[in-house]
Length: 235
Image 1 (spheres, rainbow, N blue to C red):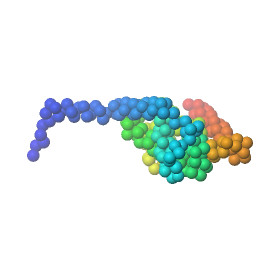
Image 2: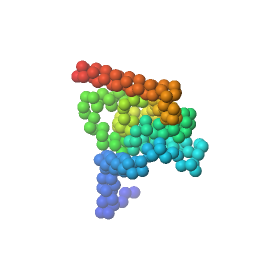
Image 3: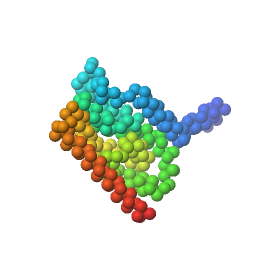
Image 4: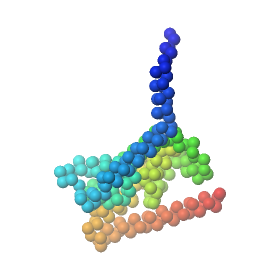
């Protein structure tokens, strides 16, 4: 049997659907979603948790799970993770705080990766023309787990930005999430412990965690400088 010929209205709906699902339209939607999320963060000021504390009517495992969910949403909206890690330690202590922070980290990374992959990848991949951009894309696409692990181990790289950049590559979900979960543990633990012991800033635990944060930041800066110097010499 012959397929029915679409009428004028069907043709118009088909063209409108193609426009709405085009790469540029999806990229515009991603920008709008991120702008709305950032505006909501500015309006609601989640950092007030550090001073006001968690709502008293919510406690136990429920509070930890809700915090992890809020943590993930906040990281996707570009809220700095160190602030959230300190809040996790201050609110729940080192053990439960670390569990909430790591769960929120993986959740936020997965959310950002999904948004970037389905709304931005198709429109942004043709823009990867520069030498450094192509090199970074190749590294992430071929060595996803190792690359993400290194990104998470060394601080100083914006978390949300790296998630959306990774989504533009051809990296798979599993290496991205595994690299994020494993690589985020050391620095996350240091901030959570610092937050849990912030009431005693002269205690050995606080000083050790603060020292680890400072040393890891220094090492990350040195590694980044060496990598940049190597790329500059090779150009």
